[in-house]
Image (cartoon, rainbow, N blue to C red):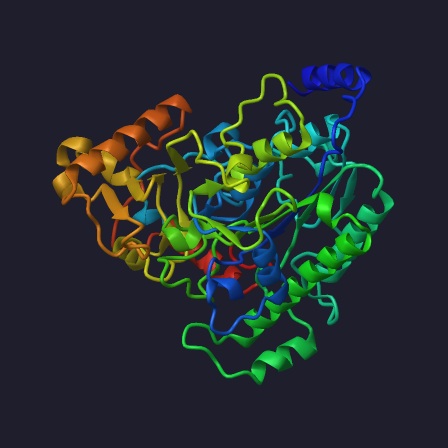
Length: 492
């Protein structure tokens, strides 16, 4: 598909630009790593300080229901870059979907793809074909044996040094400043042509790092009721400082008014940071694992200080960027998101009725206020599909659905949880057996979506399933990951 796309794009470019057309905007996407919905100042954190992100929120539009398309790093990035939900690219987790005590897994998980395959047409491919110069400055996380490197996925400039799991430069925690500096130099060099900057930070992902002066600042600060981890707050503050440097560079170059800036995160905060009132954390599909800070600033399009409560998701950025650039959807490319520009202009709502998630595997390490079964057995998530439609959200737990009678036994098998997020953002009151009409409406929509996208479902019972025991497989999986949790790489 990429070959056909390249030929058609070459023909389009030979035809020349439209006369009297306004110059397309520069596009800057700042993508934090593991920054939770409640980890920023404008969301009401009682300990974190993020003055630059807060200023961006005041100057642009805040999406109060902005989501990642997956609960942890690699699949969320694959969704963002490809514009597709997880079943289309097969990246469901980091490394493996078989993570946790195997004796507690009721089904054999769907295998994971370790990276984004080269044939996927990416945001960078599409913008490059539209005349943009493209650069990535930071964490790619989509190579692996099934994937490829960013310079094979449409990026002209690739800068990934200066960051990573083991960086120990005191004045450059997690590569924040080296990545930001490289992005600023790229913008200055290309200030006279449209550019796409993708700045996926390594911060604040474990292991946490911060400048010494920043850490001392938060050690001296009065702890909050909800947040009190000085190192976590310091790392977040340094990340915010990098955001400020980038925004000031845009202003200094005179590019601020013609640049669309997006700030969001790849998934929810880790168990080191409570996301209350949201339930859960990174890796799970309660709100704390997938709802993100989500800001778009585009001067002349977004109204300063505006807010939008329409649910949006990171797969929406691909069609939004194309529409902003005046570029066509690549030939043969299916996009699962929707162009957000009508919302940015304050005009109406989106055409779609719902957004979706699908995770057909297992992730270890329970989250804060997770599902009781998962907390007891050591999982963040088991196989699950999720839909949000309007104010309503439904979780479909695939083990119970497949093995415990499906729809016929919904009243007893705990296969479905239903929440009204407008009234219950913390997902505390399961209404699955109290509002049958709404439950069945969302369930039908979710099942129809899974069929339309050919979402793979684990269906084979796990021969090693032995609940309550400690099988060797369970010990290996759980123990290995637990030991890794505090390691240099951290838990993904």
